[in-house]
View: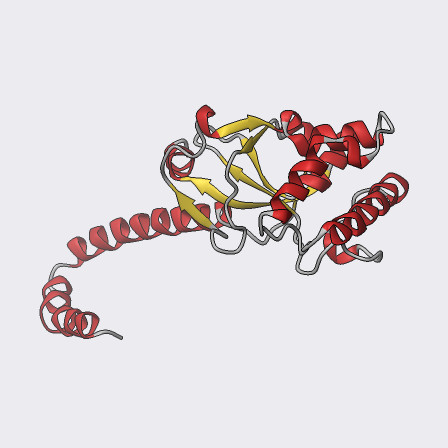
Length: 229
């Protein structure tokens, strides 16, 4: 108990409680109002906690995810956060199926195009040659080995369906991988944040549902949900 709480308790016991004890009707009225206020406070707290359940896995149709952030949020740094700002506005978004990753996956798995003939392949090699480590790939050989694993992932999902990460028995593409991450806009839309390879595969295979986690929410969405109750 803090010093302020201790002082308030002493004041309540020495002044307020004796005063109310002599006025039972007033004490009952205050008690009723306190119960109502406490219940509202508790409900609001429960709502916020429900909205911030960043560890919960939700199953959704991948078609619900139309847009992607141009700049991803770190899934560990921003886990469970409520964030204001314009990050969810159109100027900061791109249609997911217009990204070079999705286009490359579509060309490779649907049109049987070689990975090397995609813009995605060349972009990643350019990034690696400029000193950026992509998905733990430090050179061309590392990246091509990763593409082999992506081919295996595609075949595995196609054969056995989309599983949550803890259920996957085949070799993971990289350590520490989590579920597909989305963020919630001010209007309640699901916006892609992380896990573009698995989402691309899910969309190409036209899966009915996939597991996702919500990394963060827009502050205005939380406020609108509270006010609507």
